[in-house]
Amino acid sequence: MKIPKHDVAVVGIGQTKFRSKRRDVNIPEMIYEAVKMALDDAQLEPKEIDAVIIGNMDHFEGINFSELLCGIEAAPGYLKPVVKVATGGTTGSSLAICGYHNVASGIYNNVLVVGWEKLNEGGATTGIITAFDPVWERPSLAGALGPLALMAGMYSAKYGITPEQAAKVTVKNRSNAANNPFAHLQMPNITIDYVMSSQMISYPLRLHDCCPQSEGACALIYANEQETKKITDNPAWVHAVETAHYYTFGTDDKMFDLPTATIASKKAYKKAGISNPVKDLDVAEIYEPTSWSELSWTEALGFCKPGEGGKLLDEEITQMSGELPVNPSGGVLSTNPIGATALVRVAEAAIQIMGRGEKRQVPDVEKALAMGFGGSLWTEIMILGKNPMR
Amino acid sequence: MSKNRKLKKDFFEIKWKTDLPYRYSIGKLAVKFFEELKVNKKILGSKCPKCEKVHFPPRAVCADCLVEMKIDDMVELPPKGTLEGFTVVNYPFTDPSTGGIRPFPYGYALFKLDGADTYTMHFVDETDVSKMKIGQRVEAVFSEERKGDLSADIPYFRIIKEEE
Image (cartoon, rainbow over all chains, first blue to last red; front, side, top):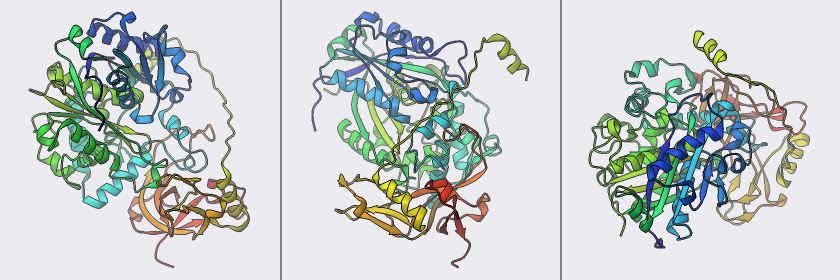
């Protein structure tokens, strides 16, 4: 295992209020809100930022080369290196990991990363279809929800997970979202019956088993140990990052239990010295595009044995009051601005480490996990801690 | 309703419609696949010369071995397979291949052709989920006039109710 040159911390966080439509702003204006908030949070001037990494799935909105449109005007990229990262659902976590590597390697002292999506300016399902093979995959592919429905059905058939257990995930996450002022769908009074009587979108997925389409942006600033000392005495230190990219086609494997999450999390736990994730982690922000996927992902991440995701939830371990709260922010079921979604997981994990979560704060967080999911069943993991690794 | 009206009033909007035509090179193996499909109603996959994994749809590179598969490595597969997962897509969206709304609801499934090591997704001729079950046998239905287009030449897979 290679030892990074520098310890790296998150020292500034910005995110917009996420909504289904932000008709009051264009894309650069929306990005600027999150970037300005992160700069103010770190008390840095734009000129003090060394490099900028931007991330979104720009063809979802029918734009291209968003470095030009967004990297310079909205993010502090003027006269600086600016690159774009676009890896589907994992875009935000790829951004987080690229930003980390650029500082950990000693190339830059600090890096600003910003991810966004303005989904209602295009069509997410249409955009997602164009991300796949035009000959073999596009004809029958119905964006992300079709394959996620297949996965949910296969998962349910294998382990006997029930629609009630899935509905409980939505109830947990959207009531958690009511404590998060940035979350898109805040539903403090949501019930299992409400979820289970919503329209069948793609069996077994009902409308409220699915994430929304959101508009908004999220920005983070990373700094090495010397710069971090100057900026804040309350940073969130990166302990481990891990990426597992899988096959090209989603159908290359049986596609229901996310093997990449198992591969990536095992490696990340080893790096971060975690032997029992439920005991050693204090909070997890995971990328659950559907209620069913949170149950399955908690298994893949080793929070419980395969097939026990429903039991883990029934035992209230992943509730706010449980041993390992999952998605205090409300998760992806509440907020899904694709290019920002996985970066929001990292931002929220950092907020928990810093103790700045207000109504959504889990007490005494020392270690937090953030997960990105996307591409063709890809997973990325970042583990953050209260103290530097060395 | 009143909320929508309010939005229309509050926001200045410019609308236009864009046509963006693309032409894709489908690759050497896909050319062979569609030739055989069109002329001989045959389904070809590709077999890795190193690990012998059979890929369907046919692929030019085995991701596990990073070994190239050529036309000589293509193998014929029977038009039958087994259902591994299914759903009925029941929501509207714009199909990027046509620019129009894709007709729905439609049956959509993951299955494995006999003799293949990878899975395939395609349309199935069933929109009643109570009639679908993991493990059911499926069979490709070919169009009489085939033109070298996957969804036109094999519009769907048929669920075989009992082994016929």
